[in-house]
Length: 462
Image (cartoon, rainbow, N blue to C red; front, side, top):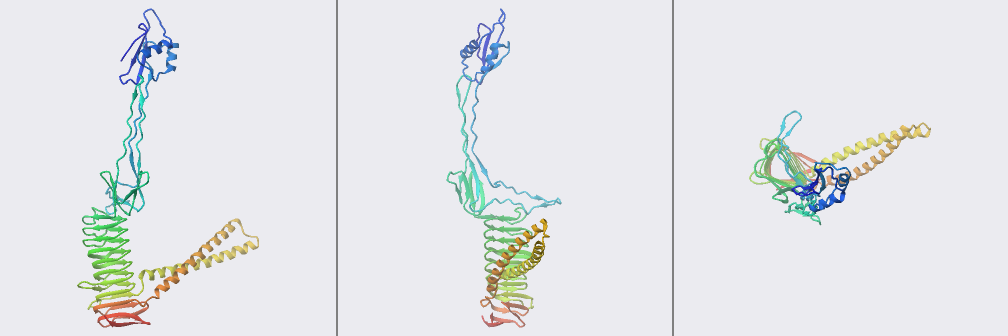
C-alpha cells in the first residue's frame, strides 16, 4: 500500500490490484484537523488515484469526517471477459444406451434408442459466436485488457452443409449423425458389427442398416432405406422403406416379420409374415404368409414354395410348388394384394359414410321441421348447424372414396398378366387363384405355366 498525509492527518492506501483506494483520516495531536474536499482530492492525486473516485463519499468525509477508519474512496472498473463461442445442438448428440425401466419394474433392454438420426435438410446445430471482452480501468487510470471469447471449433464433414453465415449446420441426407473430434458428419448407413441383441437393442434408423451378425428373436430393425443382414434372422421384425436383403435367411417361428417398400431377397424364409411392395426372390419359402406386389421368383437349388398363403401381383416363377405330401398351399396371383386389401377397406369406409349421411339427413329433416314451426331452441339450432357441416364433410369423403374405388376396380380387372410358371413340380394339395378364377390341383403337374383365359385357369407348357 502507498500512503501520504496532510501533516499526519490523512493517509491514502491503494489495494495491491489497484482496483480500490481507501482514505484514512486521523486526529492530530493538537485536536481535530478536518481536511476539505480539495485537500482530499489533492491527496488522492498525489497517490495517483484518478479514476472511480466516489464524490459523494468524499463530500460526506469533508463535512462529517470518519476518524481512524479506512473508507473506500475510489473503485476501478473490472474488465468483462468475453464468453467463448459454443455449439447448440438441436438433437441429442450424446445419446447413451440406457435400458428403460417399465412401470411394473421390469427392464426393457430392447428399446435403447441410441442412434442419433437426422432427416434431409434438418438443422443439426447452431454455432453461437464468441463475445468480445470489455476493457476495465483501475483507480490509477490504467487500462486493464479484457480477454475476448474463443470461437467454438466445428468442422463440416460429409453430407453436411451450412447456412450463408456459416452459423447453422444442416444434414444433406437422411442418415446417422456423428460428432467426433470436432467434426460433424452424417452417414447414409448404420452398421451393426455383430448381432442385434440386448447389447444393441432395437434399431430405428432413417437411412440404411447393415447387420454383420444375426437378428435375434424379439428384436426390431426399422430403416428408412435398405436393410441387409449377413447372418440369420430369427423371430424378429424387419421393416425397410427400401429393400431387405438376407444373405442367409429367416426362421420366423410364426412370429417373424419382413416388410419392404422395395424388394426382398433371401436364401430361405420359414414360418414368417412377408410383404414386399415390389419383387421377392428366394431359394425356398416355407409355411409363410407372403404378399408380393409384383413378381415372386424362387430359384437356386430348391426353388421351393410350400405351405402357407402367397399373394402375388403379377407372376410366380418356381421350380417346385407344394410337396409330395399334398401340403396345403394357397396361391393368389394377378392382383396386387395391397390393392385388393385397399379395395376392401375403401368399400367398408364407403358403406359407413353412406350410413352416417343417412342418419345425418334424418336429424336435419327433424330439426328443419322444428325450425319451420318456430320450436327450434338455441341448443337444437347449434345441433342443426353442426349436422349440416357434417353432411358436407361426409359428401366430400364419399365422392373421394368413390373415385378411388373406380381406380381400384380398374386395377382389379387387369388380371390377364397374372401367371404361374413351374419348372419342375406343382403338387396336389395346392389351391390356385388367378384373378377371379380358382383351381384346386388334384394331380401333380410338371413343367407347366398356369394362366387365366376367360373365366378359367389354363395349363400350358413351361
